[in-house]
Amino acid sequence: MDTKTDIIIVGAGPVGLFTVFEAGLLGLECVLIDNLDKVGGQCSELYPGKPIYDIPGVPFQTAQEHVDALLEQIKPFNYQTYLNERVDSLEEINDDEVSSWKVTTSEGKVFVAKSLFIAAGAGSFEPRRPPNIEDPDKFLDKGIEYAVKDKDKYKNKNVIIFGGGDSALDWTVELADITKSLKLIHRRDAFRGVPNTEAQMRELVETGKVDLKTPFVIEKLIFDKQITGVTIKNFETKNLESLKCDEILFLFGLNKKLGPIVDWNLDLANKKISVDAEKFQTSRKGIFAVGDISDYPGKLDLILCGFHETTLAVQEAYRRSNPGKKVPFAYTTSNTKLQRKLKISE
Image (cartoon, rainbow, N blue to C red; front, side):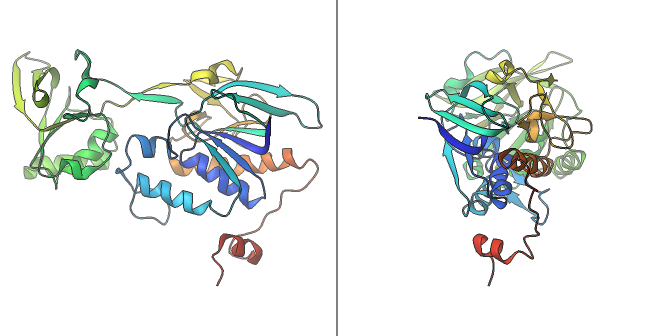
């Protein structure tokens, strides 16, 4: 039996969760679908302990704390969540004044809604593996990880981080004070992360809390049931150097795939979905793309930008669910009825 709702949201990361909030403010119901086994998207799956500093009004919050706060925020509203499911097929239904979208999941569930929101981050993703290392996954939880899920695991450990992007820099800074020793290894003395974080990393190098080794690449793993070290090769001289360690973090970023979305006849650009910057609607009416997966002039891949995008997109979703009606607007600070619903009034 088909399940009907106002909005189908593909992706239960922060932007997908905030879509539920914005829809709830307008009385719209949502269904969340995600192929992961938990809500939170990359924040929960890849870096739950990573600090987030750019959420307005929240000076510091880990990625998981941010997800937990969003879940608390949407408790008053009606929504259903379906995890471990992927949207496999999409069909347009033209039997009403405004067409609907019908999706079928990998588990055979069928949902119908006037609006479909794609909030799937960068699509499906998996961490990039180290080059020239055969089957590094066999050492997962035995000294190798592709993400920090619990930073306490690295307390008083000898840790080596490989990578040159935001995650490598962020975790170098975050773990420097709790590890026994920490080495950051990159193939060149230039980084792709936020300049401020790179500056913090270099300060730690100057004080001796971090050992920066460039230009080096991984040559082989050293192990005896458990990882005990690694051999690295100087990218220029080709000289080899062996290092002892307890834990290795390979933070090379993610391989991103759009999956079945590529077959939905949407205009794409740079492996993202093209949208207008007014409604964040795709080339097909009633399908919206918000968060990292959307592309438009001036686009920035920031969570707070995704919040803005979905706030405006939900306005159009209301019009689709309520043809001819004006979108109601009220500040949450002055709407006492809404305050009671959100349980924030005295």
